[in-house]
Amino acid sequence: MQLPSWLSGVHAPVLSYWVINIDPILVRLGPLAIHWYGLAYVLAISIGLWAILRYTARLGISEDQVWGIFVYTAIAGLVGGRLYYVVQQPDLVSHFLLQPYNIIAVWDGGMAFFGAIFLGSLTLFLLSRHYGFSPWIALDGGALFAAVGQIFGRFGNIINGDIVGTALGGTVNVPAATCANAPCIAFVNSAQVPWYAMVYLNPAAFHQTFIPYQPAAIYEIGLNLVILFILWQVRYVLPRIKAGYLFTLYLALYSISQIIVFFARDNDLTPFLGITGLKQAQWTGIFTLIFLVPALYLLVRRFSEPWRYTRANPVPWRAVGSVPGGKGGAPALATAAGGKVTNSAPARTASAANGSMAARGQASAPAAPPAIEMPPWEPTHPTGGALRNVFRPGSHG
Image 1 (cartoon, rainbow, N blue to C red):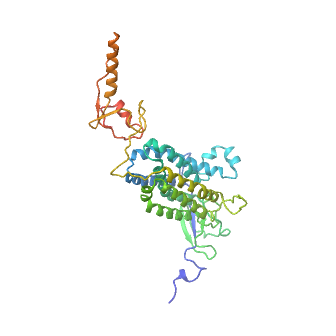
Image 2 (image 1 turned 90 degrees about the vertical axis):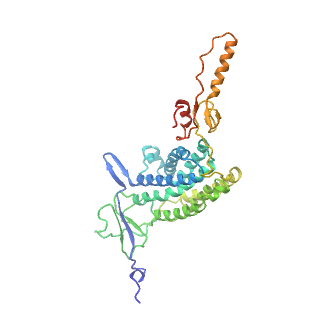
Image 3 (image 1 turned 120 degrees about the vertical axis):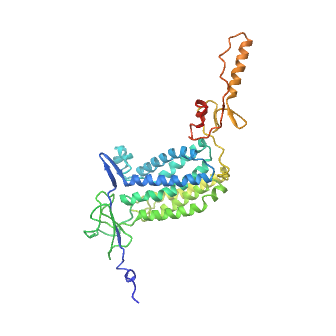
């Protein structure tokens, strides 16, 4: 029996290397350029948010709470990712500090995801109580969002060519008719180049063209899928044990993935503690595993509690208003009678004041308006719900 051609020998693979000829800029509108990288981030954030809204709904957290904290966390993640990338660059002073514009030019180099995790998680932790839920369950939701979103964000790296592995040889002679015009992705047979190599042809690509590289961005997507699969199995189980364990698990798994994948990444080595064979992200992953993950686990074990809320038993939250006297996530207007919120307390206070002034022979203060009975309000906006009762008492919002 004759074997198929793809089994006939290691020197004649059916698919050898990938050829990519895509301009990193998707479209130009005058001076405005829309990059594939930016589109990938929009897609990542949108799909991550879609997943997280369904996750938090099962946990009894309203969409208002999620939207309120999401905007700040997303901004913090983008800022943290970019700044952590910048501080790692060998030309930090000359290219970034002396030319601050380059700091915000995210299309020129990209971001470091560890920075997004650190600053985004800190923002979640600090703001969560303002939106009526535990900071530990906020971190759990952030972990799931990151695990989902990062997978889609890596497609922007593939197009840019800003995440590649080590070179697998010298310049290759790509057949002239192969991907001559952008955008194009193709496979080329070759006996000299490993089948998994990736070659960029577009002159705007971030790495040198016509060089076969290990597909490090593909490796990262694969590891991200493994992390997401693990988290997906325990996404509701761990918070019922202790809110915060899911985030701790994610941080440990992501650190391990970075230690692994950066052995293949084409990044500069960072000598430290007499060790010369590791890179910056690997050192970050190692220190995160050794110090941050155990510390986080102990904090969760000491200060967190099992998450007890569900869709049927949601978080008893009311948005914080800017009315004097309102605090702690409760409406600022005070009394509840028969299930209806009223503002009768101010009326009683004004009446008592008038009576006291009349007893002293003084002119009475203008009579307070009669108490207005208002229906319970539902928080349709995370910070403006209570204000509706003050300025629009007859509205059902």
